[in-house]
Length: 533
Image (cartoon, rainbow, N blue to C red; front, side, top):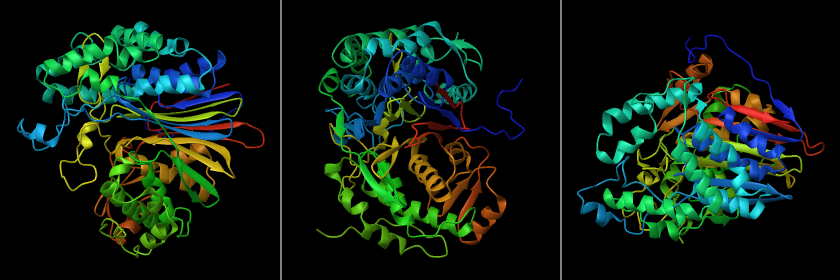
């Protein structure tokens, strides 16, 4: 029986409930969040429970050693949390050059930055949670210690990563990854039960100490020892001095709605910039001109995002300018009837999981965390189950680039949670994970929702496009061929992808402002699930 073979189209309906809802990419994690809601937890408790469970049941996309961001709607106010970690204090271009490196490697100890995810759980729990962290993390601990059967999409990406790592990651620093993520030296099969007792033990210590064990205690000591042994840059001092940052979310107004994102160093502003540009165009259903304008708007926004986004203090242009009416109008004026080669805006002189939760009181959370590229760096700390991220790979070594590597600096970060409001009331959380597809997914979900009034499930089901670079655009296999041909005539280099794996995986929960009823959509491109009551 081939669990990756689905020859017939299927339809998933919008899930409707009113007492609570959890939407994410893995059914067991969604159920973990719902269990916490039923025990009296709120949307924040459910989000933490789901996030922690995802580190266990979807390790191909995230882990304890990754970063996190959150948008929290609590008592009619929106809060933002940036739990992305900085580069180690001892790393620099000079330090890399002295090791004979002219670029940051993708894997190994060097691209590892301070993990922010455990700090996010602790900070969210302390500020907004109703239940103790030990109770909230209990489902994740149970999955780690007792095991769970490998789901379909998880098994597919696990197998893919294992094959690549087996071929390319052969030095001693990667040994513990293979020990942790294999069964008797082989790849876990779809449906086979896998567990990680060390992962469960680490979660238990994080829960018991509200994260202190990870940043200042026993786990921090193990990370420090491993890094010293393998000549890495990250130290216990880097971990001890780290704190997540509460931030003011940023918004752009789009056709009667406010679309919210976390401010840079995250790339959420790219989606907002694209909406700001595109709102000057007319939207028509399954229309080549509409798609052309959307692609061109995203091209321009992303080109500027890659050129300018980093820590806010290091950006050569401010957020207000990039979200201004003047910026949107001037960039829209550059769009013609044919595909353009985008160039950065002329500055005026002067591996990821997403989840959404909601409770009966109207509180909602948009949350995302990632190890970056799949399993991340390929480094696992012995006796902990902690797979570390490789977020530092995104730093530039060009001293003129805003995202130039500096000690203690947060790099351009791809993971972004989104939130939608109307007339200062919550509509709900949304997100699409998947590297540089994320702002493109946000843009397409919002335009489908606002311009075409698609329900949350239909907005996620809609065939997606993805701008790759220059004039190249990829579309999903089921993208209408007549639109592919029309876009090609407009000068786009269109490629039809073999599958939808690279087009992101999203979740949406919308709340009816009058009745409080929740409407959820989940991703058909993965093991997506909605748990509700």
